[in-house]
Image 1 (tube, rainbow, N blue to C red):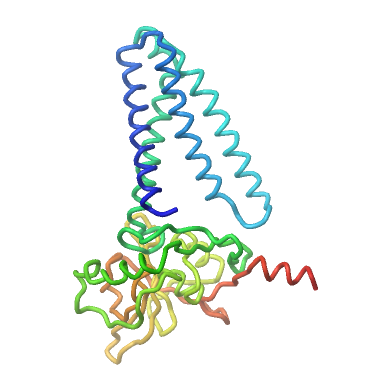
Image 2 (image 1 turned 60 degrees about the horizontal axis):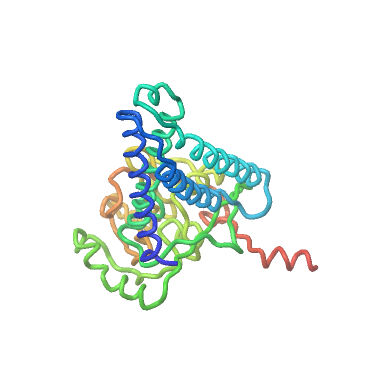
Length: 317
């Protein structure tokens, strides 16, 4: 499934959640008459939207293997799904004058529920259209980011790090790669081209998985914590550069490749699933807020990657 299917679906659900919000606000301002057919329609709409959210949350919360956290997360979303379903059908049958409905906690919970749904779908559309800050990718993706089902990574402390890949066909990706000049038109002479675009890895994946997978910026935070990284003010070759927004969210990862005689730092990074460049730390489209990190690990930045095939071979032996 690609963006041409997913984005319209979520836009449709965003419109539905806004319709729910408008209906619920109308209820508490003007009241509603007893019209079971109309209210049943809105209840079903609420049910469909909440079901989509819960299913998506379950997919996001899954960790490889049957860990206690996975079981707890799935149980929690199952409870949320059941409660939302029961609540939406019971609350929508309430009717009467506005004064009566304003005194009902169910009416206000419906408003809050619809508002939360609208916010969630709006954020989901943003994440699909612009993955900067999520995967260090700027612009509309030529495909859909999917989680690896047979591979995962682990930090030195044993935390599971999910891996991802970009599901797209070669023709679609070649068209995307060919339009790089449009995406980087504000940086025409500030970088030195090193490698062409490839869909295997993003900036984080190039540094931490040797260019084999995509990583999310939120998971880079766990890697920094578990793999003994410290912030340094005197960068050296092989240190990394972490770029953040004003809220501290990790947007981009780069590698320090050289320090010139005058102290100028030369970094290298992969710009999403686009090309790889040598550039000054400030010459990139992600952020002006960055810090240098260093680790004393023997493997430097590479994280441990496990596969289900390796586990099966081990069990066979």
